[in-house]
Length: 138
Picture: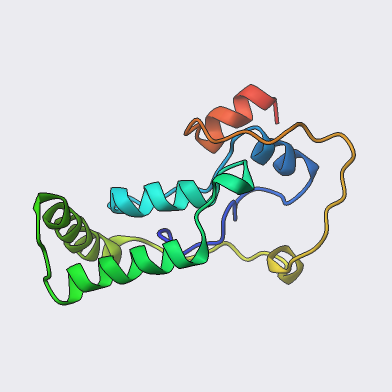
């Protein structure tokens, strides 16, 4: 959501991408994305579903951020940091491009990819797609 683009929009949705995701590839975040948002998103993408936050937790965090940003309700230094991060993001967002290359509609449609030889998923070590492509050789 922070980039305005679909995850991995520039990579073919195939077995190689599935393997890269199992090996820790995660969507990138746009410049200026608040750190609290990045941390929450990374929790949501944890390789172990038991470690992912509940919908209630996500709702509570988003509600708290909304209250901080839209009602300027900062109680402490941490909340002031959150407010400033979202204000900075609001300045950056208009400068970001959201144009996507033309791609087939079926790429953006959910489909079952059934692979037999995928490795166990691991959490991202914040490897960029370019670095991961070098590592995976594709």
